[in-house]
Image 1 (cartoon, rainbow, N blue to C red):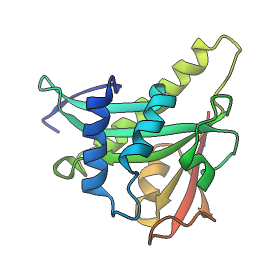
Image 2: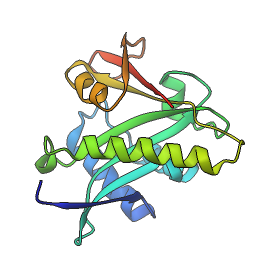
Image 3: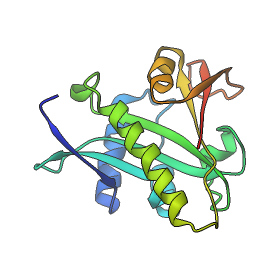
Image 4: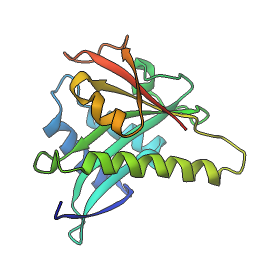
Amino acid sequence: MSTNLTFRNLRDTSEVHAAHALEAANYPASEAASLPTTLYRFTHAPHLFLGAFSSPQNQLLGYIMSTQSASPLVTHESMETHDPEGSTVCIHSVCVARGMQRLGVASRLLREYTEGMGRYNEGMGGGRRIGRLALLSRETLVPLYERAGYRSLGPSNVVHGEEKWYDCVLDL
């Protein structure tokens, strides 16, 4: 890939608006998070928003958006709430701009995100700890997540939009 990428947390609501624009452009309306939901997640869990930015242009090309939950899997409730004491990070979006898809951006985002959660755990000094990353995947994307270290647990009980979803987890 010819684009140099910088990975960092989203910093402010203008970047969250840019992330939401990517979400709306890449997901069907029945699956895309609303702007209020995206802003809620950012307000309550800014440390769980990672962006891939072009360098040196600093344009958002992809992002991961998550919240924490006490549930070991993504649930309808985890899509709407954030439990700062939860030990599971529920990844709600892994989204890459259309022109940058299939160029390794999602794989790099997932790797950076997982490494970042490891650093987060190390920095907790024995306090709150993230034990698992969990997400819902379309069947066609399960291999992407498996290459990133996730395990597919099979079809999910969660109904969200028109797709059939698969629970995928990565235990830290």
